[in-house]
Picture 1 (cartoon, rainbow, N blue to C red):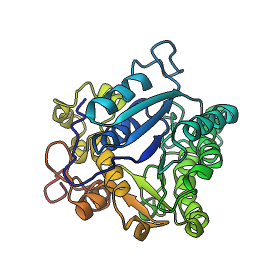
Picture 2: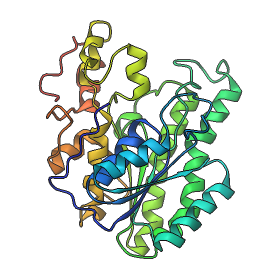
Picture 3: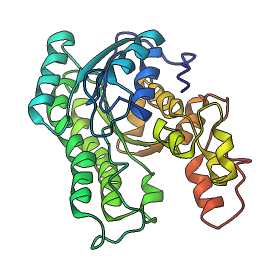
Picture 4: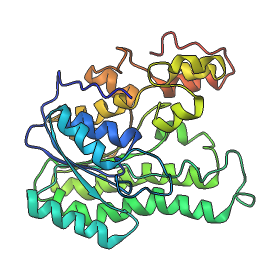
Amino acid sequence: MGFTPDTSTTDLDGKVTLVTGATRGAGRSIAVQLGAAGATVYVTGRTTREHRSEYDRPETITETAELVTAAGGTGIAVPTDHLVPDQVRALAERIDAEQGRLDVLVNNVWGGERLFAFDTPVWEHDLENGLRLLRLGVETHAISSHFLLPLLVRRPGGLVVEMTDGTAAYNGTTYRNSYFYDLVKNSVLRMAFVQAHELTPHGGTAVALTPGWMRSEMMLDAFGVTEDTWRDALATVPHFCISESPAYVGRAVAALAGDVDVARWNGQSLSSGQLAREYGFTDLDGSRPDCWRYLVEVEAPGKPADATGYR
């Protein structure tokens, strides 16, 4: 996959950052883009070269840390299960001992792609999978914030980015896949709002951020394409024309982290496409996909797939 850095506008030299759930997908690209801007980036996940999570995929947090360093930052991999409080406490203690502070926390843990069932009512959805979704998508974020925010509030200017799927405006009027999936993604939106309230007295900022239709490793595999050949999938999934690479949302986080006036976004729900217009960055191909507007204006009304004017 492409992890081309964009360092044209952002300088994060000296910043200490943490991206949870950085083994692959958005988390990996966010970490790489923060590193490309010069940050020290701690990356967590459950898959190492010695151990795979239940996903049984080849990507590892060790590789993510190496990509961060290769991009120009300092990547530090810390194997962590964010459902285990003692492991997250140990992570916070390590960052404290090594850095004495934390400037940016990206709460990105998810891991639920194989657990939800599309358009399945709560009484038919597998209960064990649904409850596991809630734990992975909500409880992990709460545990991480509990242990790591004491580091972040030591200095004014700290930033928390809660990664979710969908903007508040879109999710507020749209059924999102299933009962459990909908609860998780909307809960994360609310987390950013609540943490904004709690961080404000300490000079901190919290936002919710969503990518659009993102070409993660798992998505590309599902469509039988690569980042270089993703357009081949349009023959069977035409609306995939609005998709974006993981680097796009990574550049969005780097832009937020480098914005001295980031507090203007406090408590808000943001998207990669929205921030691309604001900060001027692009996706790998030079375009600026605006997925959430496209979904409302093109896909939802049943119009033919056409990304003209939306990227």
